[in-house]
Length: 338
Image (cartoon, rainbow, N blue to C red; front, top):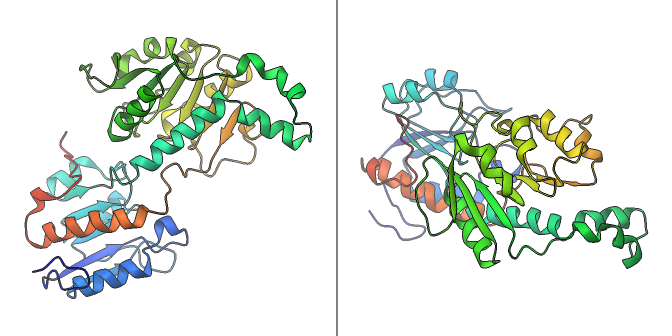
């Protein structure tokens, strides 16, 4: 076995069912990576499944690689031993079912962290500096210092202001460091109220209404779980400052969207930066389209031209561990019994 590029790494056999053959480049295995895997692992087959032009399941598969797996697909693959998600979230699998079958689960945590932080900062700085107002004035062909003066009291400078990071995982910790460097005060919500040099106030999820009350920027980085579904409720938005901004690059379903819209319409909060929604793509009749105090993006916060380079390194490392029966050495193992 060797780890040199373009050389055989393993001759062991495996059959990988892969749904990464869709039209969007984020969900389409690049040709260069397919070729790299073919050379490095000559006895590993990668077979398209669960796409418009392929079967939904592959009964002989021992590995599933992608984002579209379901409990039904898992049930139809009796030989499945390992599932690798191209995403961070793994909520598409039933924890009890995979634990019973001793199926290893890994995710792509970390490889989109820099992109997510950049997106969070883009939302925050754009809202703070009134770039959304500039766009409105530009559309009206009335962008000048006189017209922008109407927004004077809504322009922020970040230094000395407080952000609340809801979900202090890999992305949250990186974001906290950047906000500290911007001389901001940082609060966070995590699973447990443990001390951290990254934050000066740490809350648990059941304290969210208290935690949001003094934040100028609330970042939602939460995954979707039974505990987090619609956690951003009417009560939470009512506890936020009227000058505060809500930024969601986590999951749309963690927000009561109707309550968010109401809060934006009646001035309970100042504005929002939203990358995710309850229904995606955002429905054409959503009031969010017309709101000048809202910046929208189409679930692309994790997008980066470097994604597939990092995904290749992660998957190849884990594939080697799998083929050599060293699954304990895999990166990003998810404990589904937790």
